[in-house]
Amino acid sequence: MKRVLKTLKPHAEDTFWHFIGFCALGLGFLGVALPVLPTTPFVILAAFAFGKSSPRLQAYLENNKVFGPIIADWQENGAIATRFKFVSIMMMAGAFALSVGLSAPVPVLFVQAACMTLAAAFILSRPARPIPSKNQATASQ
Image (tube, rainbow, N blue to C red; front, side, top):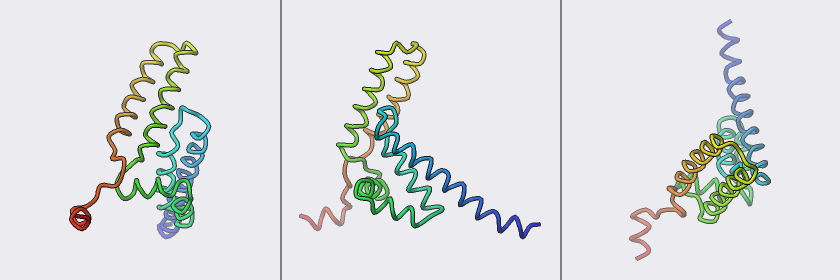
């Protein structure tokens, strides 16, 4: 019985990470069309999940013309490009304005504003471009 569980465990773990990866990727694709969902964090999460379960799918995302540079910036430096920061903040503001325009209940608006403020603070706290190391800084001078 223990032997069977040991052989099933890696398979179950891979299935779990595949599920997380595909869910994150699906939410990322929805985020392209829906201003409420951010695309970039979901694609980064998908790349992470696929890294745990499918190197082929991870490589596909990392080599993608659109998502590859975003993932590389995040993996190497925790960086989010300025244009993606701007788009994220504008989409959050637009989603909040839409909620206000649709007369969402005040408690919902309060929770939404709090969540978006925290998300915006995190996005804005990330570097916009790779930070050069001391060796790179001295080599360029």
